[in-house]
Image 1 (cartoon, helix red, strand yellow):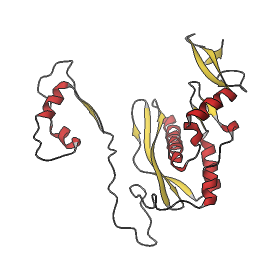
Image 2 (cartoon, helix red, strand yellow):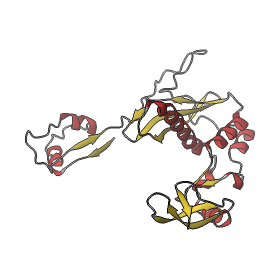
Image 3 (cartoon, rainbow, N blue to C red):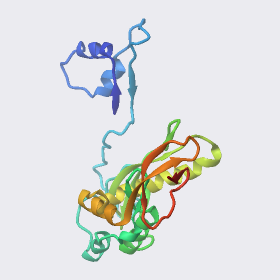
Length: 240
């Protein structure tokens, strides 16, 4: 839960009785802002409703389906077989790695799916939604669980830029799902090189150039990264 409070709100909090420990969410629900406030005195509370889920202590009966929207079944109970681990932890083909103009390295989403298919087999893994889709004026997000061979492996919230329009919502939802998949795969060790500072510096030196690009609309110039094999920058920039 994320809270942004003003000094006035803090004063209200500190005067609350402290006889028992209660979650902050309960305290904020009890605090009522004063009837009259100045224009500069504001209190904002934003809740993501992402507190830890209380797992059902009763294991599902044999043959009964597992509700993956709140279950942690199989999480951390045992390592996967060696042949599976070897596929998951295999070094990346450096030619598969891409770079964004801001210098962030990434592996195309389809590469993660291919690694999972090689490790667990098609149909041996899947993504289960844990929450409803959460839409803001500029973004859409949703939490997913990665399940492999009937075991929960990781939970992550995917996000995707979204600026409205019914014709684009399905595309944004799919992008959100793909983003969650990539984040879940980190817990399996897939593409761990992409978070290794030593590897990042070495890879950039070998495969990338830092160049000046000019925005074709506003004509602003800035330094951007590109692959050496690419002769031009992606729109809306051009080399200068």
